[in-house]
Structures are given as C-alpha cells and as structure tokens.
Amino acid sequence: MDNEKLANLLFPQIDKTPEYWENKYPQRKLKYGAEVTRFAPSPTGFVHFGALYTALINKKIASESSGICFLRIEDTDKKREVENGANFLINGLQNFGLEFDESPVTGGDYAPYVQSERKEIYLTYAKELVRKGLAYPCFCSHEELDAIRQSQEQNKVNTGYYGKYAKCRNLTYEEIEQNIKEGKSFVLRFKCPYTAEQKIKTYDYVRGEREIPQNENDAVIIKSNGLPPYNLAHVVDDHLMHTTFVIRGDEWLSSLSEHLQLFEAFGFKPPKYAHISPIQKLENGNRRKISKRKDPEADVEYFFKKGYPVQSLTEYLMTLANSNFETWRLQNPTANINEFKFLISNVSPSGSLFDILKLNDISKNVISKFTATDVYNLCYKWALKYNPDLSALLSNNKEYCIKMFNIDREIAKPRKDISHWEEVLPTYSYMFDEFYDAKKIVFPEQFDKQDIKVILSKYGDIFNENDEQSQWFERIKELSESIGFAKEVKMFKQNPEQYKGHCGDVSTIIRVALTGKTQTPNLYDICLLLGKNRIKQRFLNVLKEI
Image (tube, rainbow, N blue to C red; front, side):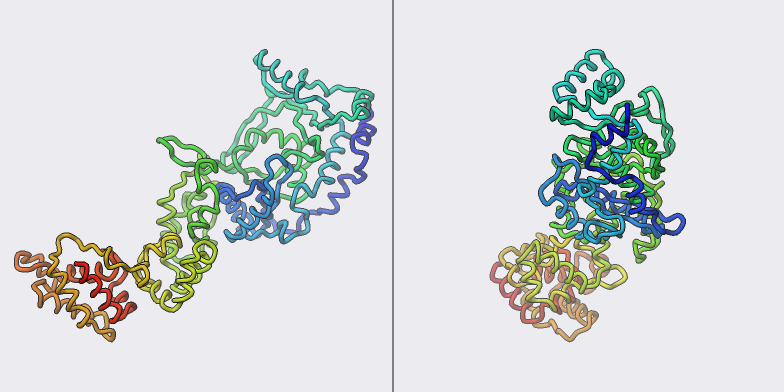
C-alpha cells in the first residue's frame, strides 16, 4: 500500500510535518541535571487529594534540580470533562499555593497547555505514523467490537484488538477509500509489532527494575472525534515539551509498555518514569484507595472549607511522600520546608495511609509557630469566604483578637489548641461576651458550692490589672489561705486533711467561672484581656445560677 497516499486520504487537512513542530518547540536551555516535570490532570471538577500529592512531588523534583514544572490540562476525554472543570482545577491549585513555571494561566514557550487546543499537533504525528506504515484506520462498530470480545472470552484468550482479531488491519487502500466515501466514521489504531508473550525491561524510580509484558493491542491513537486518547497525546506532548521525568499514579503501570512502544515508533527518547501508589485509608482493617465517592477528604476543597493552612497540608503531604521527612523536621523544627532534600527513592511503593489525626497534630504544630498577627490574618481571610459570623467578629475586634491569639504564643513551648480555622470559635468563644453563658457553667463535682461562692465573691475585688503575673498569683495564694485552701500545692500534698484544697483548685474555680473550661491558655493573660469589670460581671452572673 502507498502509505503516503493513505496518509493524505485520512488527513487531507494536515499540511504541517513533525519537523515544523520540532522547530517550534526546541530543546529547553537548562543546566545539566535540571528536571522537567509536569502535573497533567483531567478537568473533572475538583482537585483530588491524591492528585495534589502527585503535583507536590513533581514540583519538588523540578525545583530542587533548578528545573521546570508545568501544568498541562489533559481534556481530550470529553466524556469525563466537567463544565468549567479546568477553572475549578486551576483555582484549587492556586488556593493551595502551587505555582507552576508554565501553565494555561501563565503561558510559556511550549503553549498551548490545554490538550484540546493541540489537536493539529496530534494529527500531524498521527499522519506521520500512517506514512511509516505504523497506523491504520479502523471502521469497526461497537457491535463488531463486542462480538470480537465475546469470541475471545469464549475461546479463553486475551481480549483486545490484535492479531487475527484486528479485522481492519489489512484493509486495502480501495476498501478504506470506499468506507470513507460512504461516510463511515473511523478511529486510527497503532499497528503494534509485539505480542503479549514478549517482555520489556524498564526502570521505575519508585519500584526499581521491572520486567513487564509487551502490549499486543492495536491501541486507538486517534478517536472518531479527531482527538487522541491519553496514550498518543502524552507521548507527543512530553516529547515536544521536553519532559524529562514523568511522575504519575500507578494506574498507568499497566499501559506503560503501550506508551513506550509509541515513543519507539516515533523515534523519541522516552522520559524517566516513577509510578506512585495512591493515598489509602484503612477500612475494617483493610487498605483501600481514598475515594471521592466515599471520602469527603478526597476533595482538597474539604481542607479549605475546614480551614487547614496550606503550610499544614504541605507538611503533612511531605510526611506521606518521604519517610525521612519527620526525622528531618524534628532535627530542624524552624527550618523552611524548602530546605528539605526530597528523594524520589524514598517514596513508598506500597502507598501511604491517610490519617486525619496525624494531620491535625501536624497542623497544630504549624499554627503554634505563627505569630498572633499571622493567625488573625489567615483566619480572617478564611472566615470571609467560609464563616461570615466569625469574619464579622474578627473585623469588629481586631486588636482584641490579636492579643487573644497571642496568649501562650511566641514562647519556647507555645500552646497547640487549633488544627484548623474552623476550631477558632469553639476554642475561643469564651473570650466574647456574646458567646459566654453563665447558665452553662458547670464546676467539677469535688468543689463545694459555698467555697465557689466565696471565691467568686472575693476574687473580683482583689484582681489588679497592674499586677505582674507573679503578683497576680500571689494574690490567689493569699485568697486561698484565707478561705482554708493551701497556698502551695506541696503543702496540700503533705497534709491534705488540713485543707479544703490548694491554690491550684482556687485557680480552677476562677478559670471555669470565666471560661466554662478546666483547661485554657494562661489564666493570667485571659484575666488581663477580659479586664476587671467584665470579670466581676461574669462572676455576678454565675453566682445567680449557683
């Protein structure tokens, strides 16, 4: 068959050659060893937590090698595409703080970065495969393909379009021309030169040396709508965009040999590959992939709605990505995360487990290192979008709130109460009179009501806003001694039968009366911030309820 003639029959509208695109997208001018990585999601309407994990790894590999990480939207599968899905995706990544060196937003020398806008490029290379005798049109209907599959299942052989089952592989030029004249739609298939009995050796940067079966199927490389599926699109794009390292989910492992065959057919040098296992969850003792259908946290927006800072999510994802990150963080508690040397070889081939409790612990630690002003600004920014009541409260009490957030902060061992901004109001509600309710104050059972009344009646008068903390506590000790409590804890422990309790118990009664909690940040600072008049008013309200 005259392959040139067939190529022009199938793609009469394509007048460019591969050389044209090679010249348009020349080699990148980067230093030796610089990696070019890409994050290439489909626009399905949201950013999956596992996809964010992969994106972060791609970004880390590129930045540490002084390379390039670009964002490419792979939207050739129109059945999966969600309206405005690309915008949702890009906005979600921007909210996370992931900035790409090149993208549909920022542009770049290798644009466009949306695959549906690169149709002419793909058809140029598809036409080239026809010229080489490595691709052919297939006119099989869905019914014919179903019949082939049923026959294979009955004969207990591999299903697919290959060998004697590839009905259109040996059509003559005249038969192809007649089908096109009759208006029959077709797909373009790759003429696979291998069988499944043959093996190929590859190296995976997460899984090491591997021997996998060759693909034997004549895979579709151009669909009937003129767009390619993932196999051809990513091969052409990664070649022209000069991707050096493809880091992607392990769901692509099964089709790796098919992709390598296409690189070989075009004469392209394939990139390095690393296939990452998905983030998993434990369910009834068994591991399963984190699922957008079952798990709300599969959508990154879940964490934004809760108010997890980007820094917390980044730290947590890095613990999942590299097993040695936690040790590094313990040794470098104040270091910028960018100082951590990421190693693709330390990514677990079996996958990491998602643990919300661990995320919360990490986030508490991250937030505890923020300044009070940072806490205020970040919380306020979140509240403007997700909690209008809190945003109004913060806006109307800015200086007060900053002082409130600064209690037990910026010290050697800061308090770690908050893991995300949604917890701010429940944690600090007692600091606002509109949320304080004396009727809900419940004291620990071991305290006598009469003692509580005496303490609350006296403390408001002895509290002095000009006292240093040592003077403030000394007044509590004196109050304790005057009403039969030990002024020192050790005195009570030595002779418990002589006292009603100790000065710590008196502090607890004051704390509960003011906050409704037995555990809070520094009580002295809380008292200073509330002020004498508000303290006395709260105590009066509590005394009415006892």
